[in-house]
Length: 320
Image (cartoon, rainbow, N blue to C red; front, side, top):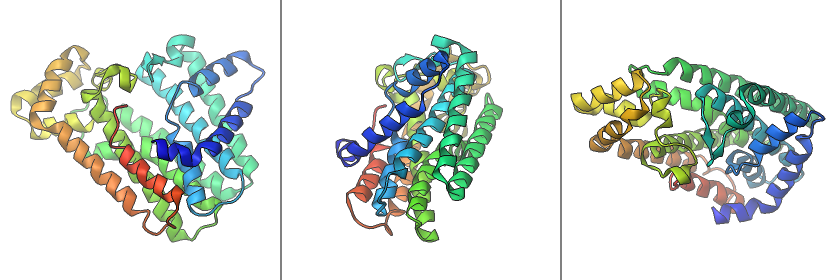
């Protein structure tokens, strides 16, 4: 990650300045909640992708700073809403905004961030940017609803799971990468290639997140282990056990999902480990990361493209 950060360090400082400026509201609670969540130590991968994609294709200007901030605001709004829906109390090792400020404040400040993001999009003066980001936010919302519909559903298969990921998580990665090409007025095939990079990268990233819920360290991943199980989410490791595990192991997972039982975490973890579910999920993520790298073949070879390549590897090789 050190190399990637060094490539965009100055630009990320500019993005942070835009974020601080655009977070301002005369309503004190809006500022408090928004600043709390934005300053909570995230990886800033999505805005980083905007910067890297734009400069990999030769962009000269500063609109990529504004669009990177837009992407971060959209992402932050989804986090605020997610934590309310999931009733989460811990994110990135800190109290969630809803735990600290309450559900109502979190939802409403999430709405503020969405609307502020759209104000900033208008300021860019590009209908294409508006089209991509409005489509992305709509699909992300559909992904949230799909995930909600799948809660406790033991009939969800791998295809269903991947559809939720591509809507809910990978779509914003895809949009972030596509914006870099749009800023450069790139040829359609280049735009599509880098957008596919973002989609595969986001898919790999989320699968590893789901693996870490059963293999990570709580202090490193910044959330309680077993959160997905407690919420009844059928993630890939659990889907694999239900399909390929011994009947007893599959039954343990099905019962835990249907009843959203965190207290069954140890038994579920044993089932996941015995069936090789984590290895399968990790291999699936690695395949997505390799597909992401392949999408970069048509881009110029420069430090920014190299950093995009490195990000695909880092999405897999991480503990948080």
